[in-house]
Image (cartoon, rainbow, N blue to C red; front, side, top):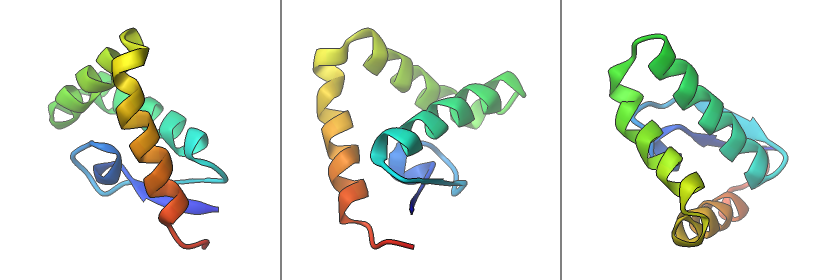
Length: 78
């Protein structure tokens, strides 16, 4: 298991997301952004908009995805 924060994934806060692989932490980040904005936290709105743009344009969003996977892979276990 490895941990990446909301900020490390492009968000504004230090909430940790822990997962067995990069896809798991990316999915946790997506849920966190949606939940935060739905709860009225506007500090996460721009990160949520960025995330939605990546999903709508998967080819151009692939660069962010690949970098997130590399960053995850570089993290120490724990």
